[in-house]
Length: 322
Image 1 (cartoon, rainbow, N blue to C red):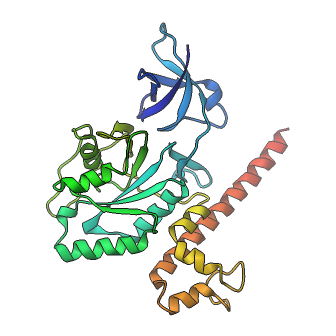
Image 2: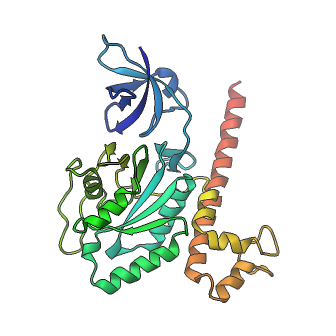
């Protein structure tokens, strides 16, 4: 029996899929999918499966086209991408308010915007802020970094309205992907959104407010009175992969200023007529923000060059085999 389904959990075993009528199956991939290019389904993928009542496990026959995906450079490969999730509407970037890492947040925003989905920044563990001044100043700083279209929320498990505000960002028929490094409280956020203890959490150390990594798989959890949220394991490496659009979307102020540069290929260094440098000197763009933009742009360009080189090597290898 051939059925359409969606991948709702990935772990060290076989993918778990759910059909449109609610039936769930553990699946293996058809040989044609994994042979050669090793094309495997990820969390959120819509797939066609073959389910036989006589078989112990179903089979994924086809992965349907993705409308969006969250992609990073594969940390184990120099020139290959790794897709982490597919077919979602919102990316929730979880970041601890009391321990703001601007460089990390800017990188997370680039990857989030590259997907084309709506972006929400959830400043977690607000109850661990030193005082009201830290809470206010950090929130204002993040709102200055985020774009006008991004939603920035301060969330605390002890503040029910803040949880409801985040839950409202994931209405019915909406899927959100929750990203952030280990220890930012993603599993706790999922439990709050679900309205029950669906994910294991670990105690937070009183000395620094950090917890241990708990989520080891990728699973899709129902949001109470809402849609679905994908809890991702903490991601340390966030290497960029063809992130031109994500950089432009995450740095709209710089991207807009660059349109006024004298030279189309301006690197915003010592070139004459650089409108970006003029904006920095005039105080309209913080110099630290331009530094981040240039660093991420350089990383992205270097990765694209490695991709092109690897593609040429693979092409020459294929010609020799023929």
